Length: 199
Image (tube, rainbow, N blue to C red):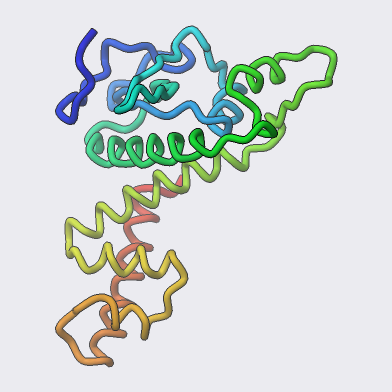
């Protein structure tokens, strides 16, 4: 098995979560199989035979599946994956007896008598995952034009007002020019979104 280190970015030897081949302009990207991800992928024929268990420092284990995504953004995908691993491990450390274990969750989804919990009737988690991925790609595009644009969009997304953003991001401009730059950034972000990410 190939060692999974910071330089490992080629997952073409893996099977996708539902055995569907990646498209010509796609590559397989690892994703943490959280409870929410199971809910998202199960209606799309998630094959549990394709789930891998990756071991992280201190022997911590994380279930991983591979999802086809557009080529050319592996660094962003891996950054997102590593953030999800961190979140998963933090949550796992805080598990209480009231939380469902992964095994119990999988059993409940397949429970035929209706006693189990099967939340697959909603696309909310899928929508959130896609939105987060799209947001990261959008920020990456903005940062390639100007690092400050990426910072501004992140702060706006976190609910900061323009005045607060000017206090946190050194634009080297006066207040009026700073506001104009923030508005320009918003327009560019919207243009990129409409051209590249909107269906």
